[in-house]
Length: 204
Image (cartoon, rainbow, N blue to C red; front, side, top):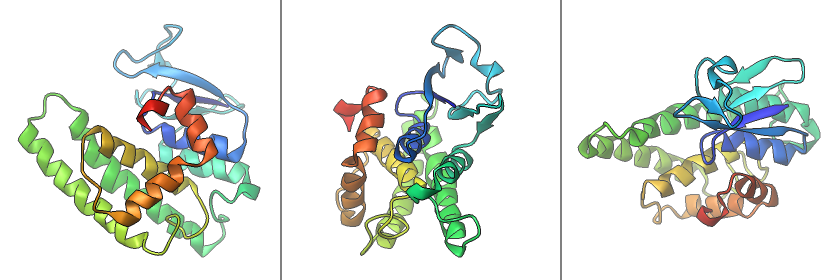
């Protein structure tokens, strides 16, 4: 498999999932602004959406959309318990968390990366994000991870969003459950490996 990524982007989530799953993969860096690969090839020929992540499969197909990719990865290493089995009620709970992160957090971060959007508008989106992370903080009370004691692919995705919050200087220090969660995920050896491979360890 090939993971098309940009350092620190939402592709960090499937990168963590691949390492936690112990699956073999190649890492292909993408310049998102130029839509080019490191060798100069047109990334739009790989993923016409022009976004990361994209996962090139061994059969030549390409999968896009992070929440789908991480579930696919988890299912290929079922023994690692990165996702509940597909025929269980808990799988729907995992999908609920993945959808929450992608729609309520990820998409509200998007305007913060746009230099054309005024600061006062960005402040509105930051307020929205704060409301959503407070919800996650409440749900993490008494839990190590979103699903309980077991680390899942949803945790890697939420952790990626918390790194973005740091990058935008959002103060989450009062959210004790969330901060403990972030530290717990950051301490995982495979998470540290992903950060190292993306050149992000100094910012971890």
